[in-house]
Length: 146
Image (tube, rainbow, N blue to C red):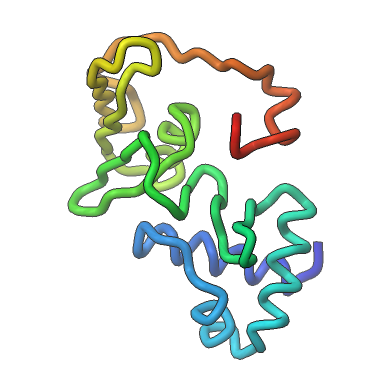
């Protein structure tokens, strides 16, 4: 990975942390003083390294553990809502932010509401079982499905 790929990746994560949303290609280009085509090229390089998941238009879909689009896994930290791709990622969002958080979702089997409270880096409330339908070694074969 090039130094610039690392700089762009850091910018993506800083933007997610600060705003709870993915930066657009245009925002990255402006912030890093490069062209949109250069951002697209580097986004694709990062995607080839499994560091980003892109939408069809090359905008960010995922920068693990963050999701750029609403999902069934909401992570509320203070007044900001982050989206995660699964429960594993939801816990990862709280860990990455190193903040107290409340994760809300629903049971994939019965639809019941679920809430997990994280305080001081520990789960303090919430019970359940996390089921992974795909073995971890195969997650990146189709990470959007996983």
